Length: 88
Image (cartoon, rainbow, N blue to C red; front, side):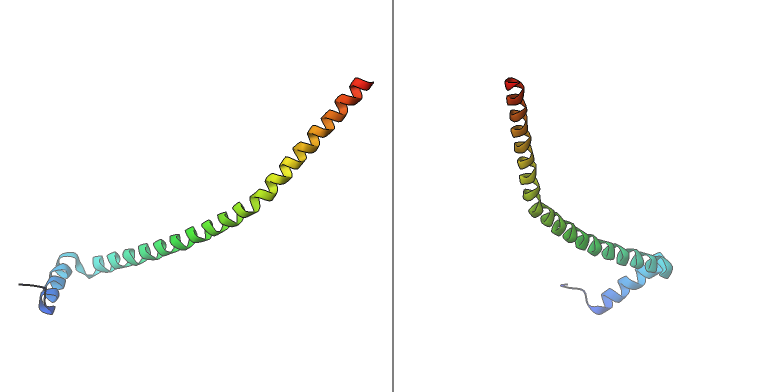
């Protein structure tokens, strides 16, 4: 009464084959295989995307520093223009 023996599995397989037919079972197997392949591809694409995002994140601080330097230069040039106007 415990687990199924090989004969039980063969009978179940025979009943499933009679109900669905060999063509339908091959389509189901093909669909299952394609689904697994797409799932693995999605996992690999996700790993690649996270790696490229990590590289982009690491390169972002120098770009931020360059922006802050340019805003500092712009504020200094505005002060110079204001001083020139006040003197002139």
